[in-house]
Length: 336
Image 1 (cartoon, rainbow, N blue to C red):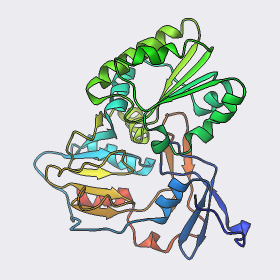
Image 2 (image 1 turned 60 degrees about the vertical axis):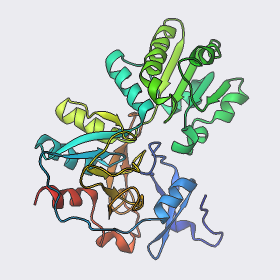
Image 3 (image 1 turned 180 degrees about the horizontal axis):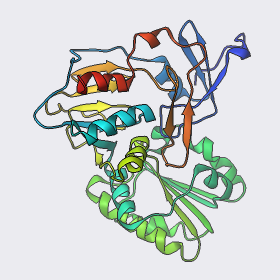
């Protein structure tokens, strides 16, 4: 965690909504000195704001190929999502939401069978049992703090965590959840074995629906690309496919992504965002502004529960004028 120094003027501290991970915490503070950010409250966000990469490689002036360009999208703001859905509707790009096998399987199960979910606030206030599975700590750095797992335990609640659960281990894990009248399950990336993800997601979803005949049980997760997905549904009533990006190739990656392919993509293998994944994972990198840091926008929390404003800091960084926004890169490449 990057903390402000004791001598720092509290008047320079500004409260921000973080655009980095899908929790989008709205209680962080930031101070700026000569364009350099100091974030207080989350080490993950502090590193992301401080380590803003520069463009690398032969960034193209335009992106054209036979057929539409395959674009995998992670965390983006509303402005970028509007540009993407417009280009998608024109047939210039094919859109996919970045995910892994576990969360892609949960998305399929939810769209087919429905789901009963809740917000972090409901977990914090009402949960008697919490079960987290997968890379929750790595992917959602402040989740335990935001839902206050220690407080849940102090009032007699149960908290369980498993790195993964498969077909063979699921029944025993669910037996632990038989007690408690408000059970909250949070599924993170890589919670299910890839070969079993569809089956485990379907079994878990069915169990949750059955349990809700006698008590309250919730099945929750966070997706990185929920802002894009929400906007696409609002504008077209058609969902964007949620795919396991670890086993697929794409022409272009954009936003804050859950996974970065080590293999080469079909033709372009470009990446647009604020942190360069490196030459082993992207032939070229186009640096862009960070919404909520360089410019104003809005973003949807990863559980789809709320739309949050992203404000520009009052002392903007010097790089703002020289960095394009993600939407400006898209205009340059596809509207030329």
